[in-house]
Length: 259
Image (spheres, rainbow, N blue to C red):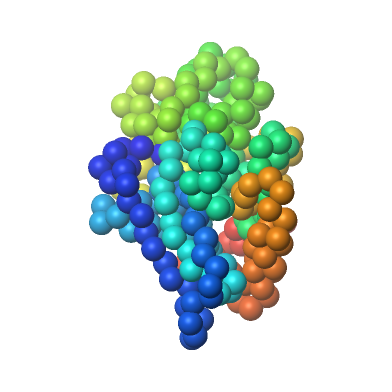
């Protein structure tokens, strides 16, 4: 499971040196993220990266005693960029799906949330169902599990795809589409903000295990088993030592890890 800001700061790179009270370990990693998917990852005007994904990545790097550098990458090119060795891992709220497993390997999940539909506050729509959105135009970011979900479960709606979530939000605000589909946490965070005060959550959707997968994981290149297991060990460690909960509680009032 995102462009205007990046146009202004296209080459932004944020460096985080993972220190654990001692010298930095010899190994280094470059982490790819999108930087346009708050509250999970977001590129600020000063070029810094913030969000749950970013803080989790930093905690994992610290646990592994590894120096990590963050690079932003447009979503639709993020897997090809990983394969081209522009970076070593993707930490960008990427859902673990069978389709993506054909191209990359994944760690264990580090969180799991479902999809939802948002509409304008004055919308007359009452149900987040295929029947409830029959004949309506639904916006989604392209190349995501949410656009795939809409294609599979909202076949009587017109689906309009966007390069970033920022663009579908603008079209919803301006009345050019009837609703949008995305992660329930992303949409909930947006409608609670000043930028999203135009809109409301119409309803949460039941995840499709084939489309939505088992949660968001860290994507790495095929065959890099040692790196995958290093991340898995670090995920387990921050879950056990309280660091994960500390980061979780900074952003959410529920356990984003999921069942």
